[in-house]
Length: 102
Image: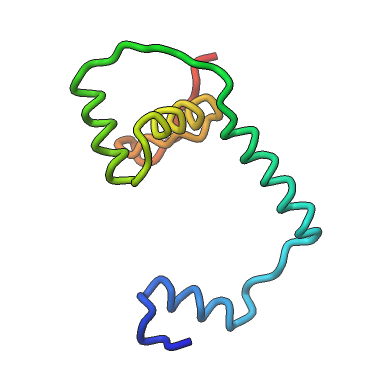
């Protein structure tokens, strides 16, 4: 592989791999199946909701979705999922997790 075509991050990753710093996870097939199942269940959409939000917020969400290359409804569902799972980071607060209200 030609290193001159790799960016800095890719070069660092390749160097790390070549240095033997990466090891395969045990039971790789089991792990793959577990994550496939998790993704399938996470992406399963079986309910519909309607919400009212400001035009400005919707436009901002649509803009962000375009930047991410995904449909805005998918972005909204992802944000809600991360929030309820306790994995949503607040970038304006030093990356602290936003916790759902108990």
